[in-house]
Length: 191
Image 1 (cartoon, rainbow, N blue to C red):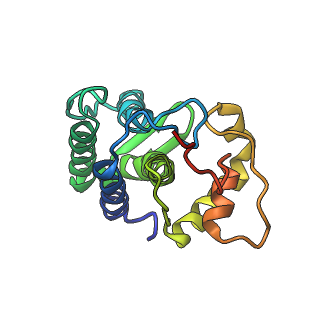
Image 2 (image 1 turned 45 degrees about the vertical axis):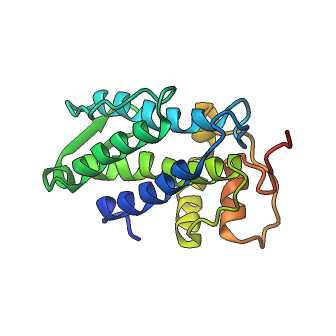
């Protein structure tokens, strides 16, 4: 799906994440992100976007229940709020001038930075729940191609771990996961 379709991509990506959220039972389960448990994945996604939006716009998302109390409800309210924003035709052309990422339309900024993050974290939460997660290989390849030129900036941000070596001929999901610092063979510890 091309970046020109942020509302459609968010609907699909956030829906896939919501499926994993609804099927997660152990919110204290370890994740592939060092130091995070399952609840932290939802908390991260619900928590960072409002500040990002507020830093360069007057957009405010609706507040849902606290992730600590109701991760499923928190995700639902948050994702619905983001979808309503992206479905608003004014979002497509609205300027979003952020001091660190430059100028984008609001829809493009959400798509590039937030929806992509939801997509990648779907694997983290699914693995924490002990499930196999197959991400769209075309989106994995697209993200990987887009991240390679800014790798140094990504690593310096502290939001990505060191690259995990994977075979050069591995499928796109494995290469993308290794690039963002995930061990594609990670399994939830027993116990």
